[in-house]
Amino acid sequence: MSEELTAQTEELSLESKTVFDNKEEFTAKHPLSNRWTLWYTKPQVNKNENWHDLLKPVITFSSVEEFWGIYNSIPVANQLPLKSDYHLFKEGIRPEWEDEQNAQGGKWQYSFNNKRDAAGVINELWLRGLLSVIGETIEDDENEVNGIVLNIRKQAFRVGIWTKDCDVNKLKTVGERLKKVLQLREEQKVEFISHDASNKKGSASIVL
Amino acid sequence: MVKYTEDRLLELKEETYIPQPQILEAFNQMIESVKEHAAAEAEKHKAIKWNNGDTYIDEHGNERPYHHMNRRRASRTANKPSLRKKSVENVDEDGWATLSKPKRSFGADEGLEERAKFRESVREGTVGGSGTVKAKPNNKNLGSSKAVDPRDAIADKHTTTFNAFEALGDGDDDDDDE
Image 1 (spheres, rainbow over the protein chains, first blue to last red):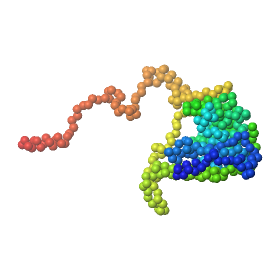
Image 2 (tube, rainbow over the protein chains, first blue to last red):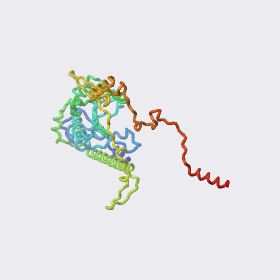
Image 3 (cartoon, chains in turn orange, green):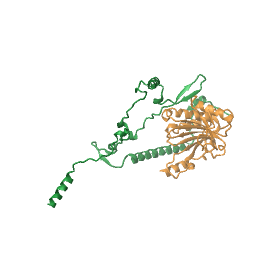
Image 4 (cartoon, each protein chain N blue to C red):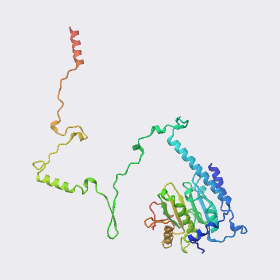
């Protein structure tokens, strides 16, 4: 079964053309500032699959109309299997620490540890996160945000905003906005961890 | 840079265009297969954990495993309640929170008055006459069955008891001698 899955996911490619390559078919009324790629991490179904095999680009878009078309055609957050991730990143940036655009950066994140309570709101909160990223309202003009990630885990739903670097002054706005987007209360803290420090436990450098 | 607020983007929700629907279809199929695989794995795991394959046919003709007859006591499997007392948070006028551990029951303030009264009475000699408290230990609650009072510890003394086998043996010998 896993071989079939691998074959299917191999068909999903970044190379395919978008609607902007054929303007006769579609003219975007509401273009976005950036082109965005949706990525998916497939849970491992076969021990031979490594991280690189599991992380797949799904589709790239650059208009509001395309965003809604895609969003309405894919499973919502709470319908994804365990150990899945959605990643929405600017085109050309792989959602990996090793990518040179991410290497010097980190992530703001919040874990919804009470899955039972969060299951009812995670779809709406993830959508709000996506809208703040593609609408570019998650930051002012810092151009710090590379993408947004959703992790579906046994114990928690986790939402993270990946940034280009770790400049505290620029990052604060992003952290505060993420808190608003996720509708967190004052005592619910978002934390920033640089990718460098991610391997060390308890290494959150900023907490808001 | 073009910016769209959340409200503006939600207003445009109806204006959709699905680029490359075949890719999204393949993506949905892949997720469905992953879900099926996960469900099958969960089922397999369940079977491994709870069923040794030994089954019987019930009165309705259904095949059922025996595991319900081998239930373990709840005390073996259920979560035990945490008896540990949690710290109490005291917030002062300035808003500083101090965590204080609750006192153990035998050290708590509850019996303070009675304890003081008892101690005073001991000091004055009202309890136990000559100022000392005579307390006899209760042997049955002690771990060892040895007597506490050394006078009670009696040395093994020789006892003569009637032994029927010995008596019979003696009789036989006597007979032989005769």
